[in-house]
Length: 225
Ligand code: DX5
Ligand code: ZN
Image (cartoon, rainbow, N blue to C red; front, side, top):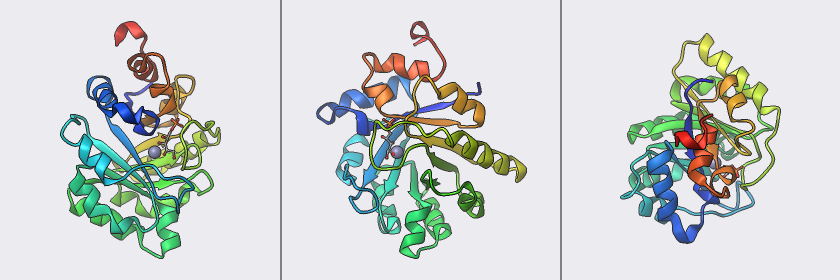
């Protein structure tokens, strides 16, 4: 299994104790995954700028803002200023809005932030292909965006492999991130398929020992934490 980056999703953390969640990422994980939902693109509302801003002074690892919102282009600058190092938005949201994903990806980069494009499980991998040159990463949803704690969709492996193949064919440097239902039982197989960033909410924050859960996602035992 290749080296993977572990990105705990703070959506599954105890919101009264976000500082503890931040410490877990700072000490044991690689990336803060922050899920922003608007109640329109997805049937759920999570959090927005204040939470990202509050984490900024404590976050020693990059903050990865996953936008599950309509009109993502309107909010890129504010999330960049709130401290995001990575920002992704859904290809299907841009398409429904009539906006050009390429322009939004360029706008994200113009703020010095790594751009990423996301697709839900029902969107074919090929929808990502025209934009790969503009992406630092692509995010493949392995559940439908909107809620934590859902069951991993098995067809995600095939999609990861298809995207990996295309990235290699074109000789690009684009990381593959996978999000939804990721845990110790599928982490190694996901990495084998080509995933390089594993987002994990429930399997980390609902675990009795979240630090050990992060280690397990890397394929290490508790003793190696
Ligand atoms: C779902 C979010 C995920 C979520 C993952 O819409 O994008 O990041 O927090 O949660 P788990 O790991 O519990 O499936
Ligand atoms: Zn997410």
